[in-house]
Image (cartoon, rainbow, N blue to C red):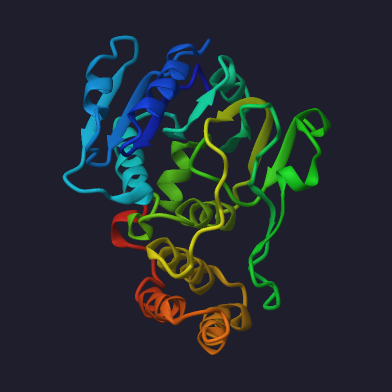
Length: 303
């Protein structure tokens, strides 16, 4: 690259105005200021709009959707807006994280196409869940994530300066525009869950490597909660979108068969697991996933 690169931040928020304040405070305190901040407000019903209207210390570009598009739909809108505006790099951010003051500067100093800031909790404990191994080759692996940063390293100090990862979260992920030109945009059809993992698979399939940057610190304001009720509405999206990743990107026929086998197992075990709601969810998820085997048209590379 010649000359300094420009960078836009994309923030997606929904009904978490008080957390959003802290996140925006963190952006305003960056030693390398962002050139633009695109905020997608997913039809919030709290005082999010007042929070955004009160900010005069950031170059905000706010889009308020008419309905809640989910994280996937929000990031699709925001990344497309930042891409269309011509920025060299785009940094994706959720509303419940706060970057350390030098986080953006540290990331911009790394000359790689795909990066993640490394997350910790409020106590300073390493909680980076990005997979070091995301296995779409082994049909016996029920879940593709085989190892994560926070299981491979005891703490941040034990990490090397750069750690190669195979999936990402859309909180702290930075991507160069030429990657988007080649592989397209986040897929809004996911709504929530696995849209970020699927995007990372696309990037890696295009030959891009993804690096976790040890010294780029991102602080989560909430505890991770990955134990969702698989019989509820979130369970539907978790099953469906996991299935979509396998159907789109499974590296052999047996891996692409896994969603069917998981569906069968859940249905057969449902009486012993205490109800049929999860079975109904997984059947619906499998049916919906079959219709998502191809990337949504709006997520395809720009022409």
